Image (cartoon, rainbow, N blue to C red):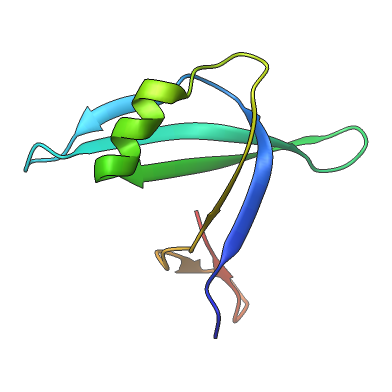
Length: 88
Protein backbone atom coordinates (compact mmCIF):
# COMPACT_ATOMS: atom_id res chain seq x y z
CA UNK A 1 0.00 0.00 0.00
CA UNK A 2 1.27 3.44 -0.95
CA UNK A 3 1.51 5.84 1.98
CA UNK A 4 1.71 9.25 0.34
CA UNK A 5 -0.28 12.45 0.74
CA UNK A 6 -0.14 15.83 -1.01
CA UNK A 7 -1.55 18.79 0.93
CA UNK A 8 -2.17 22.31 -0.34
CA UNK A 9 -3.60 25.24 1.55
CA UNK A 10 -2.80 28.37 3.50
CA UNK A 11 -0.56 28.66 6.52
CA UNK A 12 -2.88 29.19 9.49
CA UNK A 13 -0.35 30.33 12.08
CA UNK A 14 3.35 30.90 12.66
CA UNK A 15 5.03 27.55 13.35
CA UNK A 16 5.39 26.44 16.97
CA UNK A 17 9.01 25.41 17.54
CA UNK A 18 10.18 23.21 20.40
CA UNK A 19 12.94 20.65 20.96
CA UNK A 20 12.89 16.97 21.88
CA UNK A 21 15.02 15.49 24.67
CA UNK A 22 17.94 15.05 22.25
CA UNK A 23 17.81 18.74 21.32
CA UNK A 24 16.41 18.20 17.80
CA UNK A 25 13.89 20.81 16.65
CA UNK A 26 10.22 20.02 16.06
CA UNK A 27 7.95 22.46 14.22
CA UNK A 28 4.15 22.31 14.13
CA UNK A 29 1.71 24.48 12.22
CA UNK A 30 -1.86 24.47 10.93
CA UNK A 31 -2.70 24.24 7.24
CA UNK A 32 -6.12 25.62 6.22
CA UNK A 33 -7.93 24.30 3.16
CA UNK A 34 -11.36 24.76 1.62
CA UNK A 35 -13.47 21.80 2.77
CA UNK A 36 -16.59 23.07 0.99
CA UNK A 37 -17.93 26.38 -0.28
CA UNK A 38 -18.69 27.52 3.26
CA UNK A 39 -16.32 25.49 5.44
CA UNK A 40 -12.62 25.66 6.12
CA UNK A 41 -10.78 22.48 7.07
CA UNK A 42 -7.64 22.41 9.19
CA UNK A 43 -4.75 19.94 9.25
CA UNK A 44 -2.06 19.95 11.94
CA UNK A 45 1.37 19.39 10.37
CA UNK A 46 4.47 18.39 12.37
CA UNK A 47 7.98 18.24 10.93
CA UNK A 48 11.27 17.22 12.50
CA UNK A 49 15.03 17.90 12.41
CA UNK A 50 16.38 19.77 9.36
CA UNK A 51 12.92 20.34 7.89
CA UNK A 52 11.83 21.91 11.19
CA UNK A 53 14.77 24.33 10.94
CA UNK A 54 13.73 25.27 7.38
CA UNK A 55 10.11 25.77 8.45
CA UNK A 56 11.18 27.99 11.37
CA UNK A 57 13.34 30.14 9.10
CA UNK A 58 11.03 30.51 6.09
CA UNK A 59 7.36 30.04 7.08
CA UNK A 60 5.53 32.89 8.76
CA UNK A 61 1.82 33.62 8.79
CA UNK A 62 0.89 36.02 6.09
CA UNK A 63 -1.26 35.41 3.08
CA UNK A 64 0.95 32.42 2.28
CA UNK A 65 -0.11 29.39 0.26
CA UNK A 66 1.95 26.25 0.36
CA UNK A 67 1.87 22.64 -0.69
CA UNK A 68 3.75 19.67 0.68
CA UNK A 69 4.12 16.00 0.00
CA UNK A 70 4.66 13.51 2.78
CA UNK A 71 3.49 10.27 4.31
CA UNK A 72 1.04 9.69 7.12
CA UNK A 73 2.54 8.24 10.28
CA UNK A 74 0.09 5.59 11.49
CA UNK A 75 -0.69 6.78 15.00
CA UNK A 76 -4.41 6.35 14.53
CA UNK A 77 -6.92 4.81 16.85
CA UNK A 78 -9.89 2.60 15.99
CA UNK A 79 -13.21 4.41 15.67
CA UNK A 80 -15.99 3.16 17.93
CA UNK A 81 -18.26 0.60 16.30
CA UNK A 82 -16.26 0.49 13.05
CA UNK A 83 -13.23 -1.10 11.42
CA UNK A 84 -12.07 2.38 10.35
CA UNK A 85 -9.05 4.10 11.90
CA UNK A 86 -8.98 7.81 12.70
CA UNK A 87 -5.65 9.58 12.10
CA UNK A 88 -4.58 12.82 13.73
